Length: 187
Image 1 (tube, rainbow, N blue to C red):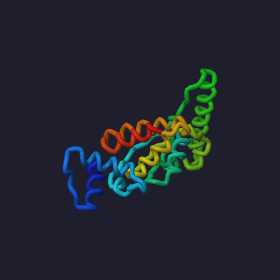
Image 2: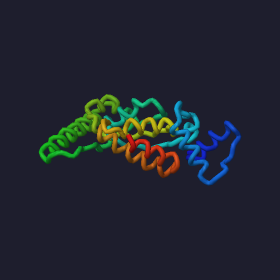
Image 3: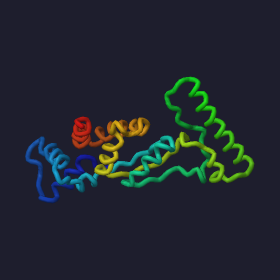
Image 4: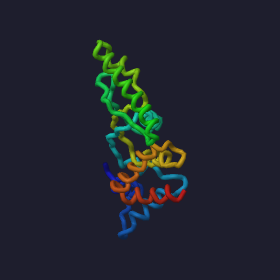
């Protein structure tokens, strides 16, 4: 919501200025992204809202970034779907992994059928179970998240979401996103 234009409006209001050439806005955003100290508040005027489906272990890492607003599907009130993440691995290891998750779902469904409340029965499910949440975040905070989650040291599964997020960022905010991408790839 807002895109590059929101950043430009936020920056130009300070001086009541207007672009004097076709590439003036590009230069403005480049200067704002690279200056020290950072001029981050103008990037807070552009906002993203994502619908995310990911394994619980990725969601828990994601929520550690207290830089946006989250609303997550509640397994207290909603029945857990038999949907989970399976990593690339050898066939024998995959069979053991899937067998464990299937057994957990069997136990969950049996407990619910026996009258257990979903909020209690969910305790048998593992961290590979998919969850869903809505994440609303401003562009500055989103860049902070991308910077951390695109790092080679970030968990591979989380990095996949960050790479997809970077593509969305560059499409929604082509000036800011592509300048940011250049900075991230340069490190």
